[in-house]
Image 1 (cartoon, protein in one colour):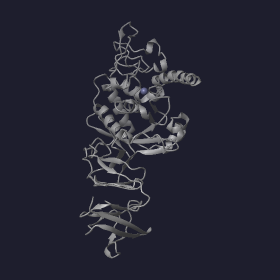
Image 2 (cartoon, protein in one colour; image 1 turned 90 degrees about the vertical axis):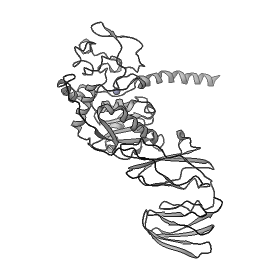
Image 3 (cartoon, rainbow, N blue to C red; image 1 turned 45 degrees about the horizontal axis):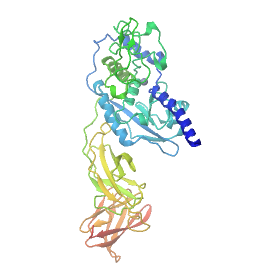
Image 4 (cartoon, protein in one colour; image 1 turned 180 degrees about the vertical axis):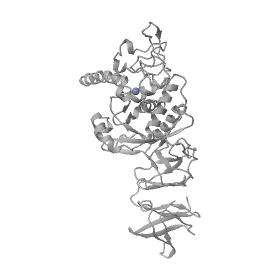
Length: 469
Ligand SMILES: [Zn+2]
């Protein structure tokens, strides 16, 4: 009974907490000092007569993925790539096209991870990339779903608030490029007073609310589902509901679909002032890479030491790989973005079927297809040929190799490789250049011994040629 009471007490404190978090959808507090450029732009903006910028501006964006001090709680990379695709869809009409300035940066910091504001002001400059949009994904915190800090010019987004169908990042980037809320002046439940209350007829649209004349009056500073369940009343006594389609309102994500023409013009003006867009970028969708190792026949791989390898895709900037038990992609055991055509993984475990799949990406296009998943199995063995097949610089694959097939030896540092048969007779000796694979096709089944000599010393490996594979 005591436990039930305790549980009840816990829930009754949690519930108001949650609803508070809901109302703090966005933590951005823009003040007039932050809006001075926008205000001068708006003064020159004769509604409808501005020149819409032609063409696309490619905008560099740097993602920072925060973990706690143990490196736990990262925003999932697959979701990040999806988010970039969705962001570019949301921004299509603006003429903005975002591309990754660099690979996502990982930062383990308890304070930043929970969005501690003092820590943001003290630490964030150390991590910012200059001349780009900087977005930080945090794992926990209840102050906001997203926030733009004008003083340090960075965006923070809570991981759970930027998932499938979310518009949190789109909204915060609106702030980044100078846009206030459509309900500017009403934030946090405050009332801007009658003279700053935007009228429905547009007669004071430049001087009240967000200062845009093509966004409807809006006084709602809480999260709301569309259409608004009650009516608002403007200073002339007109009843109305606000426009739920605007990203800069607080309507729920599913209601939002656009920036207004004036908002887009203002964002383009802000981007021009910032001066960090470029005019050309290759953004073709790339085809998926072809896996080299493991292949579907590969079984009994050492889960603590697998070098995944694939063929280069012309024009690729990086490769995304994900590995999951039983191919359950929502629970990935391993995922990473790398610029090489291989990656070492030491974090799988047990005797399981795993699947992996690959994607080739450009800086501005991570929207291509995955390769067909490949299933392989692992086996944790104390001894066997798996544990010596690979170390940090040397890769031998496939291993075991099916009879009649070739295997490759590849090293990231130059050296000399020798292959011996099981009786110790030298079969071949070659100089290996860094990153260039050497292929060898064994003539019969059994164990082959390899020796690789480099600046790091001598490494010995065995290759099993197996007619049952
Ligand atoms: Zn906001």
